[in-house]
Amino acid sequence: MTIAAPPPFPDHGLSWRALTEADIDAWHALIGRMAEADKPVWSETRADLEEVFGTAHNDPAATTAAGYDDGGVLRAVARVHGNAGSAVAYTWGGVDPQWRRRGIGRALYAWQADCQRARFEAAGISGGVLRTYTEEQNTGHTALMRAAGAGIVRYFTEMTRSLDVPIPDLPLPAGYVFRTLDPADSEAVRLAHNEAFAEHWGSEPRDRQRWKFTVEHPQFKPEWSMSVVETATGETVAYQLASFDSDYRKHSGYDEGFTDLLGVRRTWRGRGFAPALLAEAMRRFQAAGIAHAGLGVDTENASGALGLYTRMGYEPTKRDFAWQLPLT
Image 1: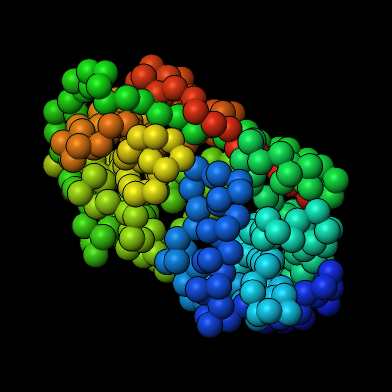
Image 2: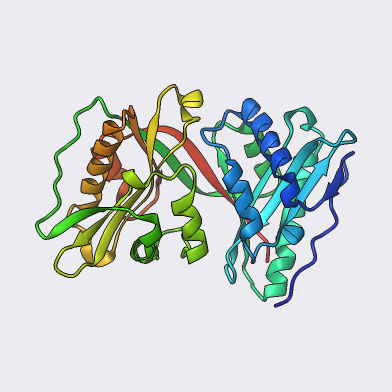
């Protein structure tokens, strides 16, 4: 496999190099300073940063840039990543609030585009795109994307539901049971997820490594997560995975159990499994003393997910944009 060399780093008064595991603490501290200024609903955990150094296809030595000031403080970071063979790559980047409005963000985005363009060429991939997600309230990030020539290709909405509102009684059809997720024995759920999301926009199969990180993440809650199993065959037909961010209250004012993934395999759709899973998740959140249930939805999802969530009592709280820049 041909490995593309990264392009030259930008300047802007910082000393640049690729990230290493020794930078994790400094990187996490930078994310904290950015969060104080930008007020995102969610920020990367230390575990998320550690995962960057455990993925073979996205070698940090070739896909990251870290800019330090003369005092040894990390002031800017950029990363590109994507699945092997995919024509879609993703960006992550950020600049210390004290160092913004100096052109660093735009220079880093240009570096990401050049880096991924070379990776696509080395892999023989044509029609590749660079995708970036931003929060609607982050006007600075939106302005950067527009100035760089990227365009919005999708809208996503975060939704929440107060658990003070009665939870509907939505039992499973006869012959099916809930099974609480065991992270060590969840391969059937991984396969069900890949099948359920095969036709969803922006979704790519999760391999065992990525799935292991998902179900072992510090914020993941296996006791709130479950599959639906057909008792006669043992088939996993649907699932719901949930998490809890203890810092969420800082930004929203309330705790929230969050549905990260919800899916029903095609053959079993239209039987009420999705609403039954959501109701069961709500009951588990409530039993743990959580005030709200939350989730995110692709507003153009052809499955009717937005309508389902609205009928279940979820209400919009914020919106995210998916931006795309053609590279080849």
